[in-house]
Image (cartoon, rainbow, N blue to C red):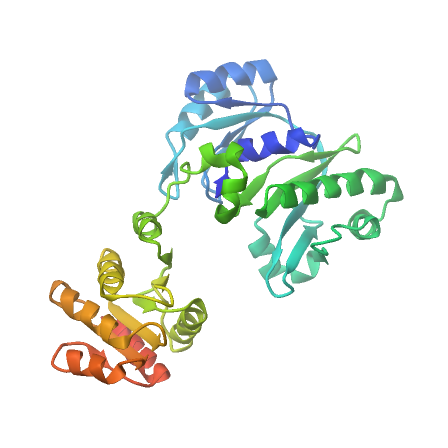
Length: 376
């Protein structure tokens, strides 16, 4: 679950992390009033749960009342990545001496929290990692012992080479990691983190992503749960209990087991196409779940072929075949299926006179799906 910038900053302020003076405007009139209260120059910042606000014109410096009126109207009329701007954060202007990037997230390879920092702030970390990977500094945190003081001190020296900032920076970093652990976050980010002209640290922007599975332990955050505008198919999949993520390709996937699903996506990419989705129907399934998964996928108009990759253990291949058979008349999209394991022979018998292309070998099945997608 993503938090808006203003919500993340509310949490920051509870931990005495310094932020600019700010007020949240719900319309153009409030934005103009708050700009006068905060004082010029100030900053208007569109509140949307997507990146790229600045490039889309959602962040503007406001010099006077006339600009406040003009820019408030412009920003409230914006759509950023198809999401309308409904709130604007009016923020005081901060005199910045240096901008940095700072975050706490999860290192899945090392299976531990990690601090990521850079001397270059204000741009997306993915872009920075791609263009200047040497500028990114990382510190893994022991999940039981937490951040150690010497780690914070060493990071500060690597970033600034200035002993006078060590205590202040270490305190900020400890607060950030405390927020990360306390709220069971997947990401806590400040970008940019400003070193001001009077040598104080200020969180100019803030981003937090909370683990959905931990929300039952944080009732104070439950009111934020429905604020993110999600893909319609993703919402339906969540209701049905599927692990589904919308992607950008043409090959729709139905797979049982997350590991097999990830391997399937990797091979689709390797053979020259992009997967349209991640969809794990689970280790134990039935005819009805297959029907629901298929009806879910055919809502995605980008999909040109459906790939069903099932390794039958608890999942019975004949159940999968029955599910395919019951929906196949509704589907104009080609279907490639690999059904291996429990009751495989029965499954092939059920589907032998249908349009489903049955291929035993996983690589060959994926190659065939990619071949069809490329042609369509």
